Image (cartoon, rainbow, N blue to C red):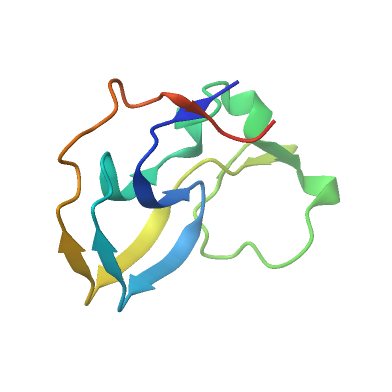
Length: 104
């Protein structure tokens, strides 16, 4: 099971076109904002495959890695962080980067 540090305000994982704005982050021991590739959660890129035959929607411009049969959706890209107040973050990180369970 993958893990993530306690005391993180917001983390962005394996997604695109995210805007984080007009927030106040204060006293998050490990980090106020963390941005991660999905590979930080699951390092086997095959676990991130989406069969093209099952994909729904327009994937144009998402810059997904692909092969003949699959898309791979682990990248984190196009993240805009602006106009946030960041105070006293990262002052007491809890050991290694990956510490606490995520999910089940």
